[in-house]
Length: 451
Image (cartoon, rainbow, N blue to C red; front, side):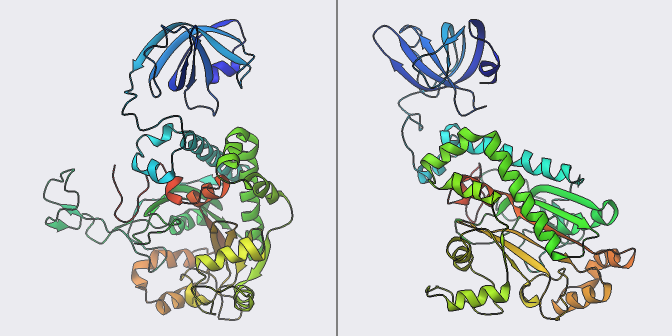
């Protein structure tokens, strides 16, 4: 209710919004109206006659006088003179009522759940987080670039990708998966991007510091609380970067800065998540401004996991990837704080990561945070032509298809590095919501694409 927040009392105003609740009493009625721009709406005071057609979910335009309030949570309320119903709402069938609804239930009505307190608050946090990241990158002299969604390259070198094809037959909305005579529109295989990194490296090779923010796609069949087929990532590339420690510090400051921005900008929304979702949320987020994030190597992490008394479903073993249970143990229990895991074996990491002097590990990191596990992944990029070509061959990649990427190492190569932040996982972290499908308005996962 921006107009309510900026208008003095005893002023005649007009507001628009949706009815959140109605209380009809003998001589007077009260309706809570909210337009979604802030957590708290405004209490409207109406006559019984004015309120007779108001039900939860009804959209309205109200005219009246803004007056001081004694009983409501806000200092002001609207003394209504005129009521105009813009859209009626059938109270008998409206799926959202003034009561608690489970996340499972809300997923079934995802076209309406943005009207719930939880998902309207989440939308505001999402918007604020975007602004926080943007402010950080702009303050640090990054240029925002747009990387393509359609690509001929698989950045991760082995990810499950969505292949693009066209059909001679018309596509019917009820038969999106029907087969037809497919042809290659681009005269070669093309996929939905799994990351904007490689293209961001192209731009950083000219512009020094760049970042991108957009959707990425992975055809994983994982049905977990951490995976989606479509999700959003903030990705940054920094030229003339020679030390992994500098990249860790920059990543840490990025997370700190954005989280502080959210805490300062949306204290009411964050307190709502503390009250209803995670009692320790605010203290956990505020703790980010304390000591430096913990740092340990992959080898040290494996030793900690192996020597712990915890019984894991997957036995931690050198040369294998860390599982979700391992990540959460390290962040939640062992460190009880965000932790950087660095210097993974080259055998379990993508081809573009810079080889360490030991010839066995690469200069990379994963940032693990409490409750979520992996939040950020990054590395120094291999800027040496011969080493990069050797790693491509070792990984079984077609070098000719990546010649353009090798050319960046041939013509004025520079040391550089970068990272990618799983934006939707970050939203889980700052709201305390357990399932990633509950921080995305329209989640896409295996077998799930309703709208």
